[in-house]
Length: 115
Figure (tube, rainbow, N blue to C red):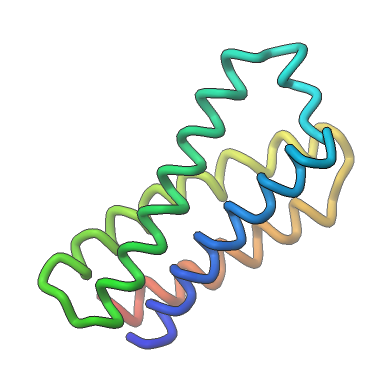
């Protein structure tokens, strides 16, 4: 379960870092073209990231709430990695599509280890 816990914490942290990087660099044009939609999306991504970090930490601490929170957080992550690649595929950014495929594969392995 250590792999699963560390994976959740790492992915959650990297999600927050990626969005922070994109926002600071001004690489989120949707803030001007679709401000409401992207703000809702950013909240959903942030909640997912925080849930992953907390769920992973709960697994590491062997807390009673850790496994249930981890499973919910991984469900949120699975939704994200299935839906989000379409945005990047539409833009022809295939490296991001590949990244999401890798995250999906590792998430599946992580879930099997916990289940």
